[in-house]
Amino acid sequence: MGADRPPPGVFLGLQLVFPSPPEDALAEELRRVVREASRDLDPRQKHRFLQRLQGLLERVIPRAIRGYWDLLTEPAAAEAEYRDWVSDLQAVQEGGGGAPDPGAHALVTVALLVAEGSPGDDTLRNVCDVPEKDFFRRRTFERLAAALPRVDLDSVLEDAVAVVPGNAGEGPTLEDLEDEGYAYLSRLSS
Image 1 (tube, rainbow, N blue to C red):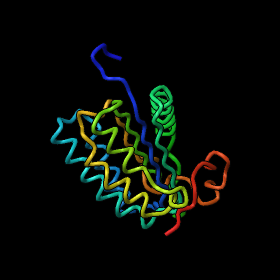
Image 2 (tube, one colour):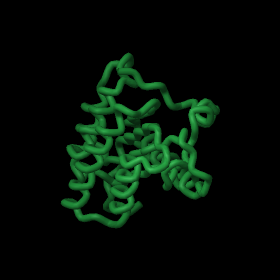
Image 3 (tube, one colour):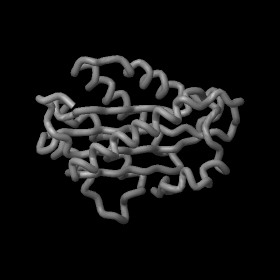
Image 4 (cartoon, rainbow, N blue to C red):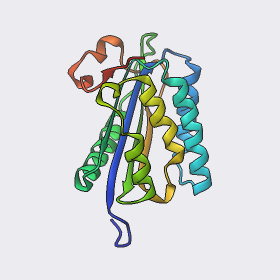
């Protein structure tokens, strides 16, 4: 952590699971956009990426069968959670190489670590202020996706976006999603 880096304040993580059989055009487009954005982007390019990501997530959400999101506002917990999510993503991305399965699913993950007291902090706190009964409704995920391009980029300390697995048709099946490793994912409702 650099000496001039503002302290972290807020972590937002969201994950969606959607069917991704072999040759799924939406999943392939999402993977391509995320791969293209894996290099360093200037603020204008990053904003354009977040707009494209929002549009793709809006197409994923109606297909998504499960999801999870979390907002942590205690700085130490926010930074620790961000590190956990990134570590988990790196571990999952190292897998793959299985035979394509028509029942496969993909997971798209977005993780943001935002400076405490920043405009981005305010944006995330406001967007995530939803009643508990609505946490796992599709409209809540639509709200979160719509907020991504509105987060002040100067507020973002770190971010990670990934689609796993990296190849269509290689993800977990419905049976796999019943495993305890996916227990944190909630079924989505309308």
